[in-house]
Structures are given as C-alpha cells and as structure tokens.
Length: 92
Image 1 (cartoon, rainbow, N blue to C red):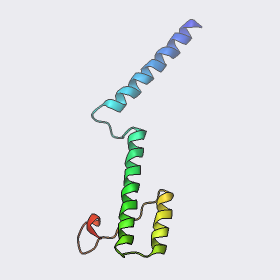
Image 2: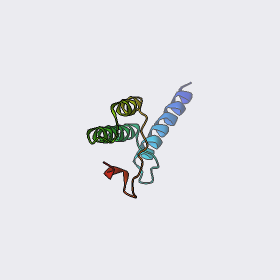
Image 3: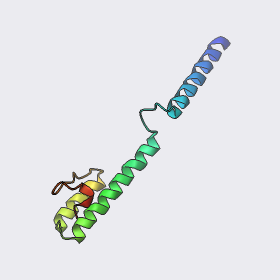
Image 4: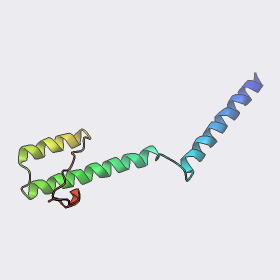
C-alpha cells in the first residue's frame, strides 16, 4: 500500500515538473492563460477606442456605434475595412 502511495506521489511530482518546464521553455508554442487574457482585453480596448474615433469623426452613425459596442461587450471584434491601401489603424 505504501509503495502505491509513493508511486502516485512520484508521478504527480513528475507531472508538475514537466508542466512547469513546459511553460518556461523557449520553444513554447502557447502563452499562459493570464497573458492570453490580457492580450484579448487589450485588443478589445483598442477596438473600442477605434470605434469611438469613428463615431467622433462622423464615419459611423449612433446605431452602428451601438451595434459595434454591443458586439464588443460580447467579445466579438469587428473586422476593420482597409481604405485606399492604408492600414486599418489609419482609417479615421
């Protein structure tokens, strides 16, 4: 019985070490969940500023602004249309 407990403890320790090393290796292919969440929040905040800029410069009306903001509240980003070959950051 004690051997089974030692074996289970050793497997748990090995799994924790493997998982920790997997998070910090340079060949990591994914970010930890909190960093990914911060990136999504920053993207949504940038999208909100962009939509507000469109409204302030008269590029969209109030109803379109409301629709875009309600979409952002549900974490749906709006695809930006490119104008005249410029990047989407410079469209307003």
